[in-house]
Length: 142
Image 1 (cartoon, one colour):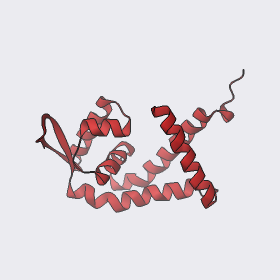
Image 2 (cartoon, rainbow, N blue to C red; image 1 turned 180 degrees about the vertical axis):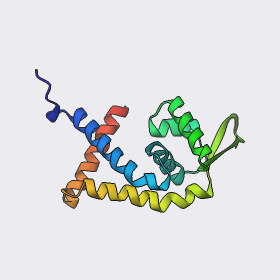
Image 3 (cartoon, rainbow, N blue to C red; image 1 turned 120 degrees about the vertical axis):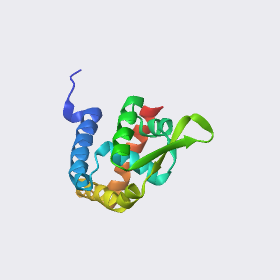
């Protein structure tokens, strides 16, 4: 059996993810954000006050990667960490006003990347594409 990269879902998904990441990086760089920070902000904009462990689970990243991302975000004035009253070993990650003010511009940048990337697809194809990707992600997470 020959491996054909152009027929490999994994190869194509990885290639597409790299292109999405590069395009997103170009659009959010003027806001002072990196892609890892943006992904973390998406979770916190939805649910401020998560723990580092929560973020690791939600984003499927390594603990050390998240620790480094949060350290940079704290340095850049995007988050603060406060003691968790329910578990003194954990800290709650909270958005600063600076991070909250970036939400509209950053999500607009991401929307622009999605629009550009999916511009060759009809609305029905876009919906089916996103649905199928979600199912594949779910299968890999199980």
